[in-house]
Image (cartoon, rainbow, N blue to C red; front, side, top):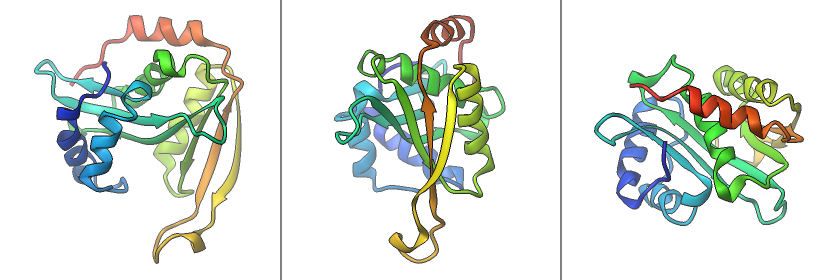
Amino acid sequence: MREPRPDDAAALWRLVRDSGSLDLNSPYVYLLICTDHAATSVVATDEHDRPVGFVAAYRPPPEPGAAFVWQVGVAGRARGQGLARRLVKAMLSREANRDAHVLTATVTPDNAASLALFRRVASDLSAGVEEHERFPAEVFPEGHAPEVELRIGPLVARVAVAEDLRTHEPTA
């Protein structure tokens, strides 16, 4: 796992496009993730240094003590191995996120996999989870479900995060 680089942006865009379930943003957004938000994000790569997963994250200016997970993506060939969970923990271990005391993310209520991921991360970190609707469906263009915000914290189990990252290498 490593910091994203500008030359990863196209691969991240394709990974999201091919997922069939994630909101596909413009290619420019993935360039911003790999440049302006690289210090707070993380990429998992295969043996050829090709991205097989990522967490796009940033520190929201209105809440500097939070690390917000914008998007988690894992290539089909790397799913079912716990990579998404390790990526979120790796993101929290990045220098730019180490002082975050809460992890936040928004998820549509029907996205059972993402809800389970964040609840499992909270359990791994011995942290509580608060859930509430952040963005109602009416604020989106037609056809988008509401987004529920998950607030995980307080984040105090950083030793467990570091230990988990040492004992599990991503595979693809």
